[in-house]
Amino acid sequence: MREEAEGGAGAAGAGEGGRFGAAGRVCDGGSCVSGTERRFDVVVIGNGSAGDNIARTLGRQGRRVALIEKAHLGGECLNDGCVPSKALIEIAREARWRPVSWTEAMARVHAVQLLVRGNDPGGGFEKDGVELAWGEARFLAPGRVAVGDDVFTAPDIVVATGTEPGLPPVPGLAEARPLTNRTVFRLAELPRRLAVIGGGPIGLELGQALRRLGAEVTLFEALDRIAATEEPEVSLELQRLFEAEGIRVVTGAALERVERLADGTAAIATPAGRFIVDDVLVAAGRKPVIPAGLPELGLETDARGFIAVEPCGRTSVPGTWAAGDVTGKFQFTHYAAYQAHHIAKHIAAGVCEPIPDAIVPWAIFTDPEVGHAGMTEAQARERGLPVRTGMLEARELDWFRTTGNLEGFAKVVVDAETGALLGAHFLCARGSALAGEACLAIQHGLTDRQVAETIHPYPTAGELFRWACARAVSARR
Image 1: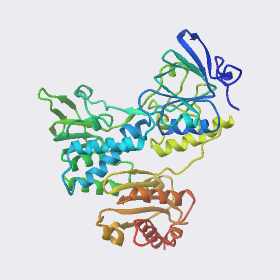
Image 2 (image 1 turned 120 degrees about the vertical axis):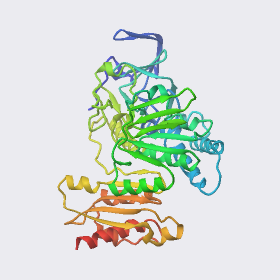
Image 3 (image 1 turned 180 degrees about the vertical axis):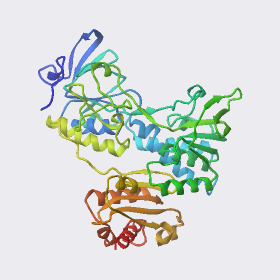
Image 4 (image 1 turned 180 degrees about the horizontal axis):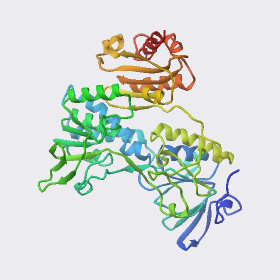
């Protein structure tokens, strides 16, 4: 059963008077605001993938929904993440064959953002039955949120406020005013020499793109390899390709200090020496954005500071749910949407059922792309599973030959006894799309033989997954 919020919010959607109560002074636990009390069935805080999906789903079902957003519609993905970075990556591909100025690149990136955002400045929420409110949300009590002088009450409140860039604890780094994914797309000009701190998806994607647009890039990764969540073969080959493009990759990097010099350049001190660059881009971790007042209500967080949730998505604060990156699980737009789908169902039905486990694929949009589905070989062995692998280089297949995308490979991980697919890993053109096909196969328990015996169109990139599975079948004989 749905838990009713304290402080009278449990009846927020009932009775006459509609959404709006009388104006006046509203106090909860010693915190007072003046203004209108607005009553809804559901209040959603944050308009990223999770918040948008929950608000629209419930609004279309006829529930009274308020969506609170403090800055920009579309969340991190549209404004500072997936959309501008993928647009920049495509533009940077062109830069390998023709000159592309930074001014042109940024103009095209921002044009893509406008295209994705659409023509309705209100995001089309009105037709979905959602009232959009601008401002920063502050919790007064369970079920009660202040935005400026107004109070929003509802029996169910969803926190979908996402994350923001984190800075590693390197002396002088914060004072050096480094770039992040939130500022790099606003640069007036491209730095001639750029240091990228972080060898994960953001650092790899932006580092390669900026190199192709003309920057001299040095990439620092604290671990012993870049793309550390991937198969070692993927990491090592990607580093080789980066270095072939002129990117300097420093792994096991222990940064001692970053200093902004008087001439505007930056100095990075490491045990291996001192690096002088024109700017620094930090892509080394994210930290949760948690609304004010919520921690004081008894919110439980994990060791990293992300909101802890029950398997159904509910937090420790009565009537309060959390979805998307702020929960610290898979920090992907597609997983946030998956969480949102189930949390919306739970709120609508008044239940708290576990969100079903699912194989979550992901991609790193370098060139060639990294696609990841299921377990790595090491993860499978750590679970004590009997393992066989199948590998196939992209250059062995005709689609990759005819398109000139010769770099990379596929690796599949299977159960050595049953042939059940455990994982599939790609470093190749269209690797991101292949991860989706592999995820489908793993999620539904297909074997290497079943994939190998499935006809694929010729010539296509998808054949790489098929024939890698055929290699795994042969390895099991």
